[in-house]
Each structure stands twice: as structure tokens, then as C-alpha cells.
Image 1: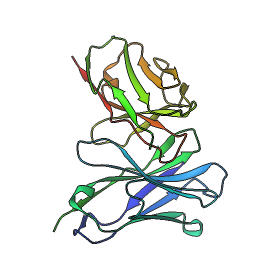
Image 2: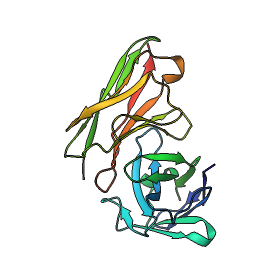
Image 3: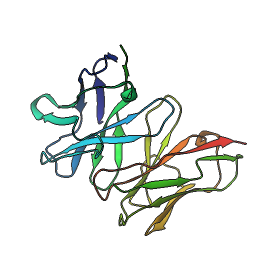
Image 4: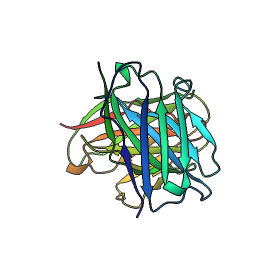
Amino acid sequence: QVTLRESGPALVKPTQPLTLTCTFSGLSLSTRGVSVNWIRQPPGKALEWLALVDWDDDKFYSTSLKTRLAISKNISKNQVVLTMTNMDPVDTATYYCVKGTYYDGLDVWGQGTTVTVSS
Amino acid sequence: DIQLTQSPSLMSASVGDRVTITCRVSQDISNYVAWYQQKPGKAPKLLIYRVSALHSWVPSRFSGGGSGSEFTLTISSLQPEDFATYYCQQLNTFPHTFGQGTKLEIK
């Protein structure tokens, strides 16, 4: 059974960075075709795709946010880390860590972690 | 970025109705479109991938179709548990953009 769990601060001050950790089990991020994605959803709004790291350590980012995002993986710890710099109140959202298989959609979602940006 | 436009944004329907949600895309995405269902306070769940392939948990009243610039999600006979918000996503080109969502409400 594949599970993913997000962890990180619930509250971040404006201009500070956000670091989120996704800890997974039951999947190998060394298996061809497997990726871990970060998706966010502001309150009452739509899903927004943020970033992906795949089995081959390729990394892809949202166009509008790519200057602020960094994604990395630690295979030995079964973790993927997302860092977002210069947080703003508009970044207040639920952030999801999600397993993907290339072209076949995002098939296993974490429960999400809510991040509020406020002074 | 590839833009995905869902219509309608809000739909009211009754149990037993047949409903179709449309996702229009701004560029060619081959057949790499997926659909998700999200209920309030929950993470989305994958429904359909590669236009028409149903995920393992999905009942057969759900179907996906389309090609080119227009893709559809159809529910043949709405059940009470189907009232939710639905999103399409393209996985052909990075970034893997989502549509804005369609909220399906009980009439």
C-alpha cells in the first residue's frame, strides 16, 4: 500500500521560506515512471500543480513559481522536500504531496497540510 | 503553459441524471488527460487517466472521452456520492496544469 504524508509548519510569516517534507512508503522513487508531485489548493479555489521530481531525478516546476521553488528527493529516507521562498499571504493553501506515474495521472494523494502565511 | 477550461463551472443535477463535463485545452495534449473527483475537506482522487481509462475504484457509470482540444467526463446515472467537484489535468507538457474545476451540486 502506497502512502504519502506531508509535514511542515502550519504558519509562516511573509517573506520567510517554507519547507515541506513528503514522507512516503510503499513506493520506490527509483522505479522508472514514478514521480512525486506537489499540488496546492488555496481555500475555496482550484488545484494548482507546483513541482515534480521523478525516478531519474528530473525536476519540473510551475512556470509562474519556478524562481521560488526547489524540489529534491532523498531516496534513503523515502522523502521529497519542497522549498518555496519569499512566502506571501496569497500562498496560503493546502499543500498536497502526490504520487504520479508518467502520463497516467496522480494516483495516490497525501492528506494535505494547511499552510497559512500571516504576520 | 497549456490552459484548460472546464464547462460548466457549476452544475445542478438530480440523482439519476446523465451529466457531462467538458475540458477544453489550448494546445495538443495527445491523450494525456486525467480527471479527479474532490469532496469537501478531502484530497482529490484520480478517476480517469489517458482520456478514458478508469482507475481501479471507479464505477462504470463514469466514462471519459474526447480528443484534440475537447475532452469530456460523463456520469451516466448520478448517485448521491457523485456530488463533488471535478478537475481535469493535462500530463502531456510541463507544467501539468489543471482546469478550474466543475462543482456538481444536487438540484
